[in-house]
Image 1 (cartoon, rainbow, N blue to C red):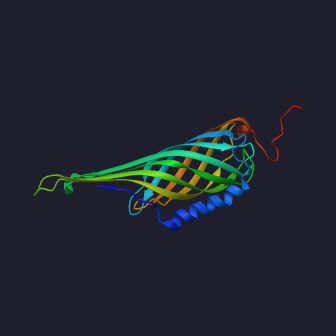
Image 2 (image 1 turned 120 degrees about the vertical axis):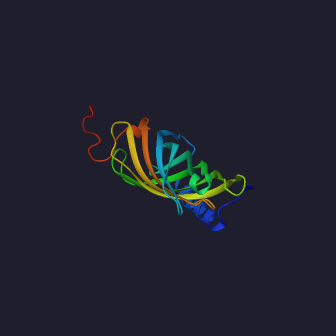
Image 3 (image 1 turned 30 degrees about the vertical axis):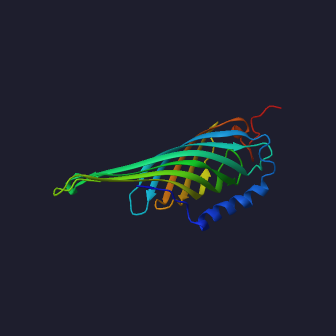
Length: 211
């Protein structure tokens, strides 16, 4: 059985409103934007009424050019899958998974290379699927499957940790409002910074430089 859901109009409108407030502060954002950081993300994913499961993600941080220094555009792809079996109860398999392809806008405080809190919002397509297989003793095996393509917003808060050369680490809390599969994620990012993104800023940033 397939389904095609879209998050409630209120939730989608909320995410779009966040973008609407952000984008006027991003003059001619397309001019001169470059890759600031590539980030691999490990995730602990929590669904309502279930335990945490593991996920992964890959994110590309785009900044610079005419983009305001506090803003970064983050295209991302993420994936998680959870599977359980309880054969003693006749449950052969209970599986859920989600491929997420979308993007976010982050607003950052502080200086590059130091403690840097941020918050943001995004919108993505979630390719979800679930399968339940049972094998009761008094009848034959039964399998029920469901899949969908869901447009859903997400909201997040996080902090970039002090840099180790070009290496960047982050911790993030992320809420994904996917219909029938709402998710809370704890993200741990490990990234590599490029160009200006690898240069420290703020007090003490010029120490050791030769002019």
